Image (cartoon, rainbow, N blue to C red):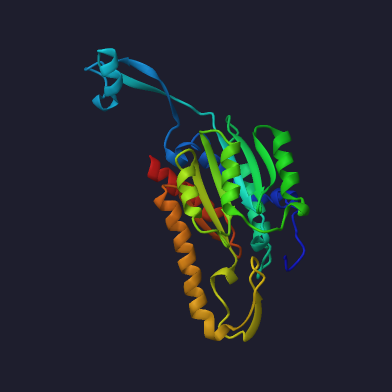
Length: 299
């Protein structure tokens, strides 16, 4: 359950001059390079043609097609700029927590809306899925202002937030919705995940460019060492436990670090991208650094 009232009035925040300037920088950086930011220039198979020994790279020869045709053939590819971006946003109970000014879900909603601003308007379409133990809301990727304001209205609806989490089901439902050539950005705290969830990430990376963005509150990472005794509750099982923060602070910190490392390893071993953010720090600069790093790795 949330510890304070949800504040989801996003539009006024994006009228701030400093915020708009930061988003414009991200937008200009991504302009024309959104596809290469992930896995290189988008290409599609266009067909076969005879191999020209003087101009063609021998690595493009398709030997199976060559044997069938009786002549040396190479595969031809054509660049494609049309693709879709789908943001999958965790709005389950564990996201309704804060030890700072913003709930994790408020921070995540601002990030999702910022991406809608920052993704260039050059043919890309963007959609949104919000999940708990189901897809609470689904907006299929589309272009235009109408879709943009539909996403805004969905993100700012308090009724869409809260509930148990079923991460694997959310991934299965998302996979059924989308086509290939999609960029899927998962925004979550990645807490309370079911065993075997990493296999679903591995499957999805075979079809999509996948990006995991972990949203963490400071209390997800560390406990105050001298705060005394607290009664804490598991948001998934509702089990309560009385703890002494001084006694368990070091163990809690290590547990948090191990969990983040495990989630990051799942994404990286699946050849997907991963970014970790904290709600007590603005996401604009880390987001830009992340895109810059991805671009260098794909150039």
